[in-house]
Length: 292
Figure 1 (cartoon, one colour):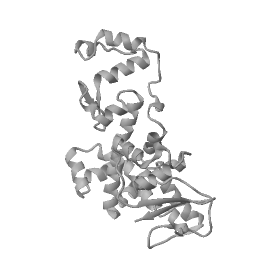
Figure 2 (cartoon, rainbow, N blue to C red):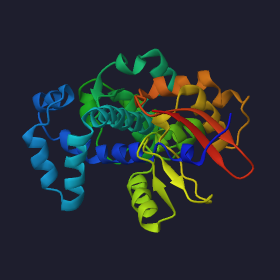
Figure 3 (spheres, rainbow, N blue to C red):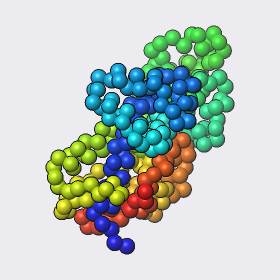
Figure 4 (cartoon, rainbow, N blue to C red):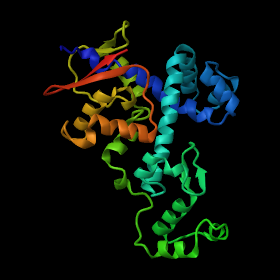
């Protein structure tokens, strides 16, 4: 299969739209449930536009409002993707803080382990496990008496946790590199893609193709940056994760079943389009075969 230069950047404009949903979701979260449901159903509440207009960067606020009007389907789809990333980030933090284990998430036990509470994104953790984990990491710099009085934990629980060797409050090694990579790059690096669009235009080193929105270089350029992982199909994502993390395609960690499991575990949602369906490398370049 022959790959053209434009296939390297066909997703850049979509990535810039995805990037704008960071502020949309941030402001949506400040509206009541009814307004949020209106937005999901296809309306744009005046309250949301008013929130955006309060942004310090007025020009960027105008860009976001324009994107909502000109690309309503993509923006709403990408908002769901962004919201799933917010929840995935919460789950990743809970794993690193030992508030929950991978096995408990896989079995759904974080929802049923005694008294639980909702974190801001709706993920639930055990009050007892979260507090004892904090005590073990910090030596209980705080007051767990109310938990003891409420019979959620016992004095023996606290004493045992305090005797444990101190450990980081957040331990990234409990999650593994693949899970962290997926969350870190699911929506790409914030602010990156809009910057590239402006740079590509101003540098006059190529042109945007009106038919498919791809950027076509005038000549090969040594530039590479990561597409948002939510644009990849599972098979292409498995290939790319192995390549990006320096692993073999046959490694169990980056197999398709392992990647799908992490996506399910974190509750991550794929974008509907574009879809990167294949990744191919040459001695000097990386191509992403993309279907709009």
